[in-house]
Amino acid sequence: MANLTTNPQRSNYSVLIIDESSENIGQLHQMLSGDFDVHFATDEDKALTMMDELQPDIAVIGSNTTGFDRFVLCQQLGCAAVMLVNNPNVEDMVKSFAFGAVDYLSMSVNAEVFKLRMHAHSVMARTAKLKKHTLNEAAVMPEAESAIEEQDRQKVLIVDDSISNIQVLNEILGDDYEIFFATNGKQAIEMALEEQPDLIVLDVVMPQMDGHKVCEKLKTMQETKHIGIIFVTALNEVQDEAKGLRLGAIDYIVKPFSAHIVRARMHNHMELVKHRKKLSSLSMTDGMTGIANRRQFDQVMQRELHRAIRNQEYFSLFLIDIDNFKKYNDHYGHVNGDECLKEIATAIASSRVRMTDFVARYGGEEFAVVLPNTDKGGARVMANKMLNAITNLGIAHVNNNGFGIVTASVGVQCIVPDSQMSITSLIKQADEALYKAKSMGRNRIVFIEDLC
Image: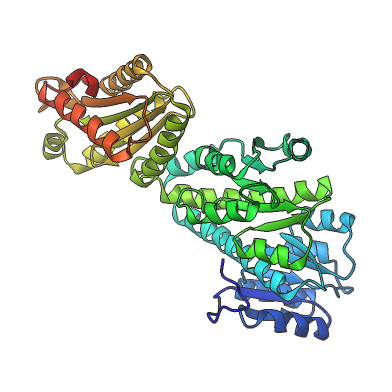
């Protein structure tokens, strides 16, 4: 994240300041106006009117609000809101988060830290608004929406060189989230790549690779740059917090901390993560069939291949192609062809037995299946199950080599990959097996190793 105090480019994020004190508004306007589009309201009615008219990315509820209930207003605004107070206290902070605030800060907050936090919250808030708009636009895709709602328990990766600190955070968060942990920077990066946590709780002071370096590395990697990072550390100087936020962290919590505060902050961040994942899922869903698209397939392949290499376990990839599909379209028409693809996608996806089994539309009439930690025996069982699911549909196809119904061919690569194995090589090998299945008469399964 760029240092906003030295960035000549003005951001396009908008802020609504709500405070009865013109002095407070002036102070906040001075801090934000160089980087944000700033508006202000001095009473509750004006604030709600401006919310409807301007739809700002974020609201700042100032410390002088004696004429209205700041907590109720926070709930009514319907946008990300930051609470500013003169005398911070734990009870007030917990209540703010319970009413939907995304942050709780002292009016004496350092200007740079304030702008960095506002920028981070604005980015997340804009994503949430975009998600809502996109979901409305995608109302015609019930299959995609249904798939998006089926979400696993959210994951948290705790990184700290102290086991006792990990245990404390696990006790606080373990009931609500699936917890993973790492005790050094190298392990943290590997875990982030493999588990793709929703949030990372990261200590700063660690031997060899400190938290700042871990954060920098994660933010430069395509596979992990989207993961939110929360620094939890004993370093409590303003420059420490500013550095963490500049590196891309979404929050900075100083030890010792209150369990209530950690839970509240995590809950609010996780809600935004849900919004972002829903938006991302829509962009990674095939619009016609409702299953994953090629973009999501590429990401899953990268993650699961990395896991298989590290754990030295089997990795199976299927490429499934509908036999003589061009002839099907020519005879029955493209509308029926689309319906055929939808039914086959559902049949293949319904054949999965584990949450980790992954099905995607690879392109045209071709589908891809990723089966982590699946050996040749398991892969053969699953391939037969999927092939039978397709033939059991009994979709008529008079021009399909005498079969009379729609069939498919399957090419399989099943391997314990080493560090030299690439995604391109795996796909090429599965494709070679698929080509052989078609040349042998179609409606069959071929493993690449059978060709050696």
